[in-house]
Length: 264
Image 1 (cartoon, rainbow, N blue to C red):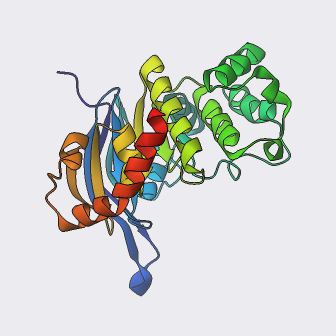
Image 2 (image 1 turned 60 degrees about the vertical axis):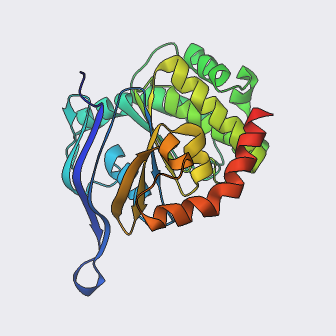
């Protein structure tokens, strides 16, 4: 049997010091298989986004062990290591407007990773990735303020895909969108994963999104994983912790609305 693609063991991330020390992530361990969508779910501030920032290299101040494929992740990455990781892992952020420069066109946003990595055929790459996320190549000349929220997030996804990574880290990728647009973006991400055989870690506070996208999930609270379970077990109510049940029941109405919208 092949080893997991992503391995996180005893991950710890703290902020502050002394009396103001906050343990944002406190001994978290999990694995993710190739081609899997693994969910991290919990309320705001539970540490789930901090895990993604550590995995992506945005936060180098962590303890523990992390690996993606055969690559053990270090804390301070050289330029060569950072470039190699950029070809392996990309991240999609929560705010589709805040993650795009307001004075840069879509083409400029998509050209940046191409230029950094010295790739050729830039026009062809940009056109291909725009079509892949459901946008016309003409969108390359538009500015973020000329796009809807859903279109901005499609551009953010296109920027993540343009280097052909193996892993996408999705940090609340639809929470800033209305329910109908959320379903469109989630369905797009599912189709892209199927076509490209990508692996996702999806962070959300919403069980509706997790149940729609994931095969397995970990429930977090106060920086620790309370339990891991499959989505079928979740839907059947086979959870071990009362916190998981309460959080899931609070999301039940939204889950039904999302499923009805996605299947319409």
